[in-house]
Image 1: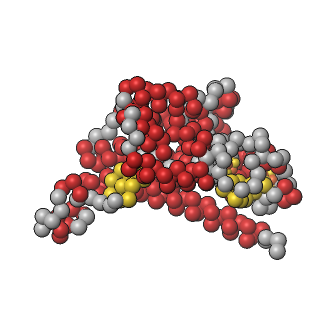
Image 2: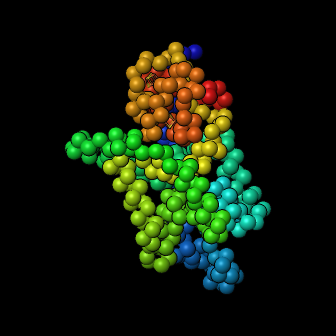
Image 3: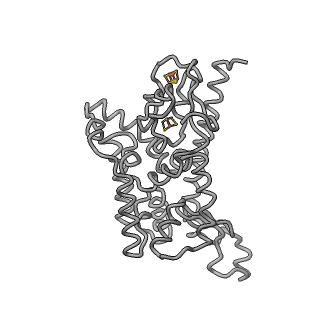
Length: 300
Ligand code: SF4
Ligand code: SF4
């Protein structure tokens, strides 16, 4: 049965709401964990008062998007595992097992961390209107400048991993924006101060967005986004086109935050940059005819 327009819009809205909910939930966790560390008595106060719980296990949840722990359940960013492996020159099996779920998610669903979970991505989406307003007011065409810059994500990633290996220290994590946000929130709540590097990185990312182009950091520099893009290149869940429904209105091309031209899926999708597409579905959300949708398998 053909899908009515209202039904299609309802489905689009539902996916958008779900994505936003996921982003907000991660942001809430990033705030909640430091807050709980600062206020451990908010967790099981009676047991603490009775002295039944030693200090290190007071709070059952810790970490952020780089490494997260809830009771005995652990999740680790795949790149955190790789970096730790290279820096320590030892394969730490518990870390590998904690990285398996995020790794499988990325390989099956693509770089969805960036669009469905990353709180910095959420801030950058909110920042878009300001960028558009500034471009209108000033006439500044930052995207022209951005188009002259090479994609440095993989070179930056390789450099960070090489430094981690030779200096036996974490380097990529310093430049992972959601981890920087989580780290600064933790410092802020527990020590009442923040680091210049973390705050500078976050402010710099927002400014890059304003003076260059939408998602400039994600498109050109982000080592962890680059790594997730490579891992998710052969995803099975992807954005796909039903060519007969497309009216060539180009709304999807304007909506894509990475300027990936989803209309190129009208061909066979071979020219499409699957390492950068993060399955955000914003092209799908704006398509008035339902020509774009998520699909398992299909076009490449
Ligand atoms: S092509 Fe669509 S799903 Fe992929 S990044 Fe662009 S807007 Fe998001
Ligand atoms: S928004 Fe939909 S109808 Fe318009 S060009 Fe893109 S796929 Fe075609």
